[in-house]
Length: 418
Image 1 (cartoon, rainbow, N blue to C red):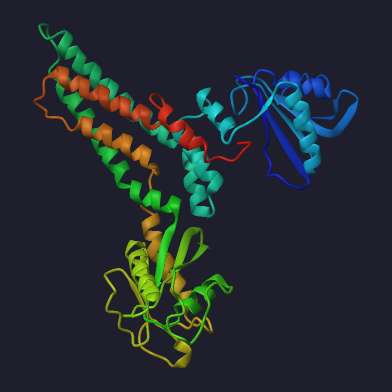
Image 2 (image 1 turned 60 degrees about the horizontal axis):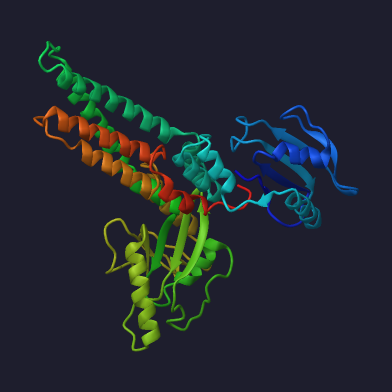
């Protein structure tokens, strides 16, 4: 492979800029700039020179092949954080035959060199894009290889079951213990149950990864935009006493006690002869129907469009007390209690998350499950083939086989330098 390089820190001015090299020429390139660095994983302060030109004084270190993030020789140069220094170093590196890394290329090499499986790589991508504590914890489970270990556990059971079945085929004319077929069937049933449980947690896990959507709906002038501004603690939506001010959907992305939540301010629900407003109402109704939760703001406490599980609140509590949940987006009265209720509803969904959070993983599990939906009276030869198909699907889930079609899609989402 080529030796690649990239800044591992965000571009721009800062205290430190870290440039990472990976590939067969990493150490040699580092030493051509900084002189001998014999001890791996030991940082040293060195002058970086390109010929007679002093580029910078930097902290440098290198990692041996097989003992780095990518599995290759890796060198790191911790420069002063000025873009001009990183640019000058890049010129020196390219003159030595190195090239700039593509997005996610360091992580891709780590996968190709067996330093992580595909599920761990997807978890790393999730970790880099995590915005809340709940997303961070979910991503950390993936980066620690929990899904890969579970896949290996299930495959081991299938291998054991397959061996028992193959024995019954190979020694059909000889004496085989009577308990062999029941043990194989029990192992298959156990794997099926585990896969169903993993698939059951997929929708909740995927939703937490992507974030929850809460739609604020209600008639015109019910205070939807005022509530959105209060939640966001800034002016996001225009607020006016003129009905129908909100035509399109406004979004507020926020961290609700560790949960990623997007609040939607939708157009007021009413019949309108204005085609633009009517389009806004239709679009709002569609987004509200797709949302994880809906908050209905009412003036009289009645919400005809509310369905089971929706939150119905009386708006404009500053104009007078009323029965039930009342809020005022203007003064903030009752808003904290409303957010408590929203959090409680979403937290229940987050509690159902599991190890499978990507569509690709769920599809591989579904193929394994379909292969294992076998008849107990099936001929041993066909049953053994079903187990092989299921084991291959589990291997594909973590990228052990057949991962080529997914690599560009997965690693292109990474930043340069990772």
